[in-house]
Length: 253
Image (tube, rainbow, N blue to C red; front, side, top):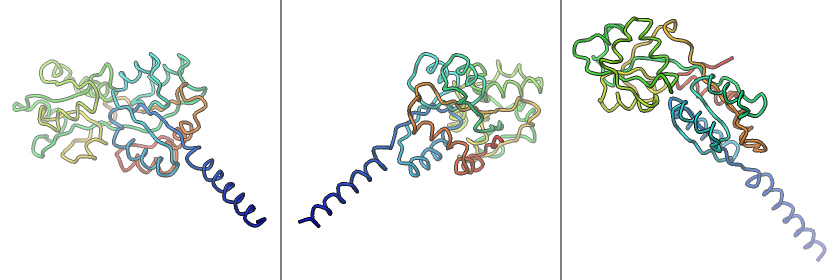
């Protein structure tokens, strides 16, 4: 009888230990992700979930749209912007936990075509082809990759082409979709998108646009959410960095 009681106590203790070391400690994290980073985020998120047991919910959109939603109180835990300016503005507005902002990826802009033979030898020649009906770019007012594309056109003195031939996407995801579906023959997109799908692209000289430093912020809504803090820290770890490099991003120091 004594042995049975001891065994019962051991089983109960084991059950409680299992509960409190596993599912009970698992948490939910809502991450607002800029469109360009969605494929990499899905891979990083899957790894994070497998390693920790936490559940990630991804909200995808343009940086400008997500910033506006957060400013109005959207209940997100982590913001992965396509720039650092919006994250800095959220910090100034008291929307971030103290000191919880950092660069997490360095983006690269390319001129992309779904099919080979459409792009010429360089950027100007590709944009000035007589048979080019449309090229796609993201909205410079809301999407950092769109701003970078606008800077490239200005540096090449080709910004008048925007009014003539540009199809403007609300975000870089929609912009890539224009080219992928053939609604635009070529487009300014993120290297990460081109690498994920394949096709043909031209590298753009980095000196023609400001560096695309993508910033992360741990939002005030995440206060007390250990899983959100864990994911925020995970972004700087080796596993996430490997996905960044594989996906066409640079890694911040």
